[in-house]
Length: 245
Image 1 (spheres, rainbow, N blue to C red):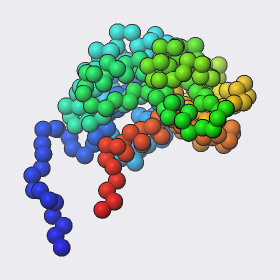
Image 2 (cartoon, one colour):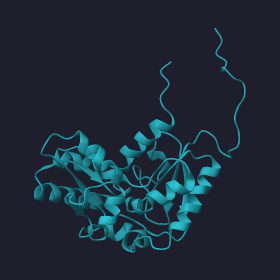
Image 3 (tube, rainbow, N blue to C red):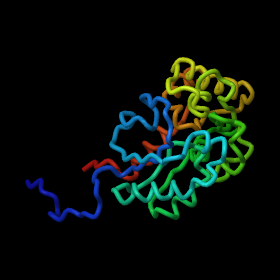
């Protein structure tokens, strides 16, 4: 029995091989702990990163990413030239750029964890809804939601009134973060969301820095919790389907 490939021709044209997913990172100094999208060890597969210079969390979240689209397009095109076969980003608020990025790079693009909301809604029994925990409730506009296919009446809760997560990630008040306090902020927002909307049957976390706290939130509310980690693992599965032969 031969174990040689059916063809001996290896296709070139890219600088890097075997890394089909490219990730656009915001320029930020906060810690990229395990579980964060920006920590390479978070992923069970290799990824390509590109930092979009000047795209701070404050500019993207609080200022609507104004003027940054050309920079994101250039960085995404660079990743595709290197070898990326699909693109994602490190901020759920970049749903605003979904159409433009996909049109510019010509490969699959998933800008935001919010894109999961319609998928998760389809799994729920009648009378149950998806709720969203975001890093900044006051900044998440109907335009962000519509760009990701999220119903505009979706129940929402934010972490901006917490003690740690928002002030470090968005305001940049420190390069260090108290992980326990950050977890309390995310879990607290999720518990408040469910308390105010008992019809919620699952939660989607908008922020790509929230996956480290997803398990704690799930345990606290007893509901399924989805985040950028769940979305990107699904996204990557289509890029490299498991071979069962």
